[in-house]
Length: 434
Figure 1: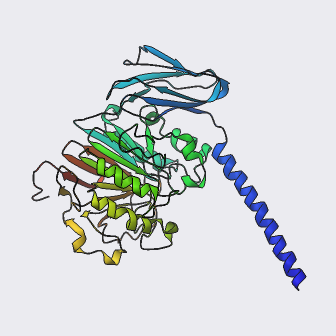
Figure 2 (figure 1 turned 60 degrees about the vertical axis):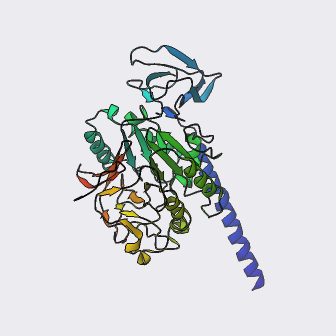
């Protein structure tokens, strides 16, 4: 009997080892397999930007850029032959639009209307498109995208930023899936905007995410230097945007990310603060934030360890995905428990669509939480969380409009209907009757 047991355990060990090695091989292959990729921009700052692309052959690529779409005054090329091209353009003017064209002999590139804009110190207004869990290609993804285009009259000049809330390439965030699920369907956006993306749990199944993008670690795009691509911030116009990795980083109270977040928010000088992370602290959709086990307990950790920081520094808006639905809170504060503990004392302003705050972020002034994880997929959902009274089992995306004293949000569904909207005002005017 003992001999049989030993042989059985040995067999199980061998099978598990073979599976583990095979699994590691698949993950590594999917994460780093080379795929050709048309140009896209990363590392947007007030005076520089980086253009990346991947050609079929080893070659010296180049790019031209200038102020006009039909006239390129400057040229930069790779220092040596490569398939993975990365060219940084520096010495640019702040808050300025440039046109560019990429030349790569072995890669067919659509150079029509390629452009980028440097980050702005100040801005009269800003429009931001936000999508979550958008990495499922098909008619639903396309319809959500088209409804946003209708809202801006198919004029990309009316859009300033593009933010992606994770799960950007289903099912596993492989290099090939990123080409098919993000770079191809959003080709016209990629030609004009930096995809400011955060990692989701499906992206985290492979290592491609941080291989594809370069993110600012030294405060190049604004905010406090983080020393990590997994958490950083962006200052653009009136907005301080904080990007957090809720999937691959420890989010314990004593973690490096939490220490950086406190320091970054304490030094912010912008009137509006938005935090983006994939995992929501509150949801009763495809995921349940009351569960200590759902999503590996990450929702509980976000609620217990990050929400108090959002409260302490007066964060205006927290954007998340993960649940494939739409959910939104009122202006709330100090809720770190499960849904049954949510009470009127957690509501700073009990209004449907209009809220007021002081121009300078202040402690316990309240935060609005939005879950928008339905930009390509939809879950069966109860949508009964008491902190999230505005909830829809609908696919769609967000359009945010920001001025120095107002922040407004619209949830546009797959049919183009505005199902939810609100405004936060910091202009000393009231919200009577709203």
